[in-house]
Length: 464
Ligand SMILES: Cc1cc2nc3c(=O)[nH]c(=O)nc-3n(C[C@H](O)[C@H](O)[C@H](O)COP(=O)(O)OP(=O)(O)OC[C@H]3O[C@@H](n4cnc5c(N)ncnc54)[C@H](O)[C@@H]3O)c2cc1C
Image (cartoon, rainbow, N blue to C red; front, top):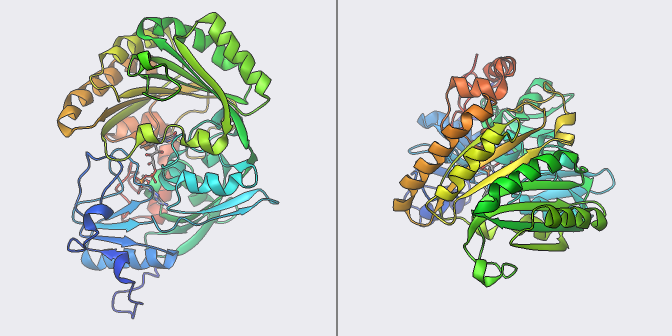
C-alpha cells in the first residue's frame, strides 16, 4: 500500500476560519458536545471536514502533532467514541449531502449524514434505506456497526444494503470499496465499525417504502409484562416480514395519544410497524387486543418520515446516558423472569429497555457474508438504557443497567452484543460477538489497512 499522507510542510489551502476549532474558538464548547451529556471531552482540535481530501489533511496534521484521532459522525455513540481528550476530532458533520438515483434505486450519503437527511431525500421518491428508529442518529456509526430498525425483518441490516463506500485510509489514501474493489475492506466495513478508515460517502440500495406506513403502540401495566412477553414470543416469529416488532419496558410518555391518567405510568409496550397492506397490520393489532388486552393503544397510519421521527424527542440530546446490550437467542421463561424483575426497578422514568427482533431478511444473509458482530440466526437484541436528566442520577441507573445485564447473561448463552452499544469490552466479549474466525479475519484486514491502529477510538479491533 502506498503512503500518500500530505505533509504539513506541503502548501495546504488554508481552511475557512470556522472549520478548525481549537479550545479558544467561541464555538468550541458547542462543537465538542456529544449526544450523551455524560461524556465531556476536550479535544486539542476539531476539524470539520468537507471532503475526503480534508480528512486526509486532518490525518496528516494529527500525525505531525502526534495527536490521537477520533472520528465523529452523528455523535450518538453512548460511549463517546467520537471525541477524545487532547486529540484531533475529524468531524464529518458538514458532509451531509445525499443524492438519490430513483431509477437505479441507489442513494449516496455523506459520511456525516443523519438518518433524517437520507429519509427525507429518499422518501421524495417513495424509497428508503433500512436504518435505525431515531432520525437524529448518524448514518456513519450506525452503518459501520450494522444498523437495525423498523425495516430489519423486511430488508435486513443497513450493511446488508450497502453497495460501496469511499474511504480515507489511515495513511491518507482515498479508496473506493465495494465487492469488486478492496473487497476485504468492503467486507470489514460491514460490521467492523470505524476501525478501517473514515467513510466519506456511503452508497446504498433503496427499497419501496411508504410514503404512508402503519404504526401501533400497545401499552400494558407492569403486572401484565410476563403475560405480554410470553404471548409476543409466540406470535412474533410467525408475522410476515412487512410487520416489525420492538418490545419495550418504559414509562408511558406524556404524549397526546396517551390518556392523561397514564402519563409516566411504568409498564411494557409493543411497537408494531406495518409496511404492507393496512389490513394486515390491523389484523395483528386486533389479535393483540384480544389476546392480551392493553391498558391503551394507538394505531394510526403515518408518513414513513414521521415514523422515523416519532421517537426523536424522547431520545433528545443532552441527557446523561449509559447503556449495555445483549443478544438473546430466545425469549426463554428465564429471560422473561429476569426482564420483568428488573424493568420495574429502574430509578428514572426516562430509562428504557428495548428488545428488537432480528429475523426474516436479517437471517437470509450468510454468517460470513459480512463482518457483522452477531450470528444471523433469529434472535432478539436487548438494549438496557439509562437516561438521566441530571448527572447525579446516573450512577444509580448505571448500577441498574449492569445488574440487569449481568442477570440476563445466562439466557444470552454467550451470544455477544451489538457492537454499536459497547462501551466496555474485552477480548472475550469481542470473540463472543464476532466469533473467533471473523475476529481473526478482521484483525488481518486491520493489519493491512491500519497497521498503526490510528482508528482505535471505537470498539477496537487490534491489528493482527
Ligand atoms: C438515540 C439513539 C438511538 C439509536 N437507535 C438505533 C437503532 O435504532 N438502530 C441501531 O442500529 N442503532 C441505534 N443506535 C446506536 C447507533 O447505531 C450508534 O450510537 C452509532 O454509533 C451512531 O452513529 P453516529 O455516527 O451517530 O455516532 P458517532 O458517535 O459519531 O460514531 C460512532 C462510531 O462510529 C465511527 N464513525 C462514525 N461515522 C463514521 C464514518 N463516516 N467513518 C468512519 N467511522 C465513523 C466513530 O468514530 C465512532 O467510533 C442509537 C443510538 C442512539 C443514541
